[in-house]
Length: 202
Image (tube, rainbow, N blue to C red; front, side, top):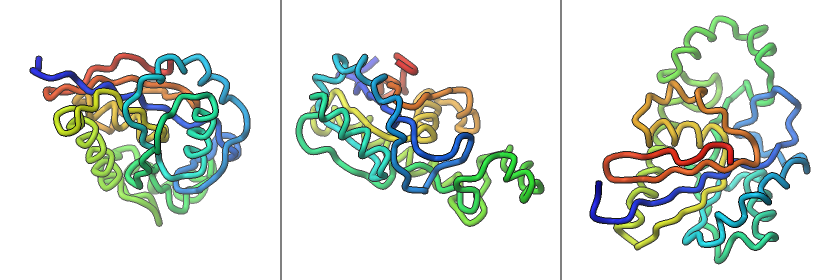
């Protein structure tokens, strides 16, 4: 396929957060719940030879990275990048779907179309996709520019789902096809021609 090694991308979703069950938590800078992080203990061996670490600057991802560092998984200083933040749900932050239906039912059809949707008081889906796509381009070019073959990224469910879609050439509208669990590992290999999904919810 290529004359260089693909970049292997380890995408780690943060552990279970402290938001109430069923709530949409995007830009809300909430902490971890303190539960469920031990799932990551089972994948430490796969992360021991990572060349470079990236992390969303949000509290729940930083706490997840700190847990991994305590387990000896992260060498060197991680790079924090705003583009790895979860999407901003605006006034839907920390609301359940039932709350949204009760107050904004007229927006549901547009939300279902997704790609042109702007969360009320929040982020445009198109802007979110653009920043995730920009990060994917950074990761995909790292082997050629720096010789980096393995990158670990501690980020959010929406970012990982969107990155999978973009890497595989699938419309990001289909992001919900990938059920990315908290404290789980997704593995992508990035070639110049596109990506290969090597593992989901490891």
